[in-house]
Image (cartoon, rainbow, N blue to C red; front, side, top):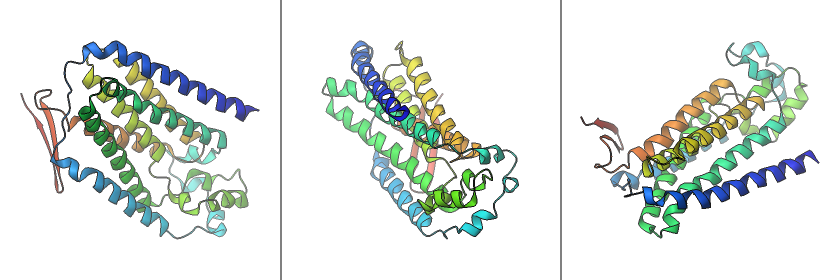
Length: 282
């Protein structure tokens, strides 16, 4: 019964979000004088690089040595550093499910910034934003996969001595490669990428809009709840969530920023295969 009400509550949130997406853009059309973004040469390789990084990271994860029940039986709370150790006492499938809900709401909310371009039938601008979003998504995903594949950090629940060894092993056996996918949190990275991307794009398009502070506040709260839920679920350490949030926020901010038109900002970013250039003009 509780699960049924949780599903209904999630659907209700999506309906409210949809109403906001329809209502708010109509009120801010007049504030958008021109489109602040333009595509450039870097767009030819940013998404492919992200996809390649994701593929390589996933291959590293697939090739990791499987953890045996004997390995898990030797894990103790004290094996984890003092900062992250509290997470080893957590295990909650309910919080795990909530983290998916919060992240899904944020994923749906990204459509919010596309609605004005659709309603105004500005298809070129819609294409630019779609390219930017694809880049943010695949860069964040690629960085996450690489980190997981290279670090191989075991998730906190593997150290939870409150659960029997057989229970921990059964959880890990459902997706053995995922056991070593603790660092860093993909949920947190994705949530903060989407939260900052949506807020940044909204702010750039409507800098004087009354709703700007609510877009930033609401999206960051949902992203923070996603990270908190991952911690409470026993799937991630606090450091996993913090790093995921930092990486996601950086990606969500820098991708729109590097596409800003020169006449819109004095802060410019250019990325080449072997270099990153940041220019500030005064």
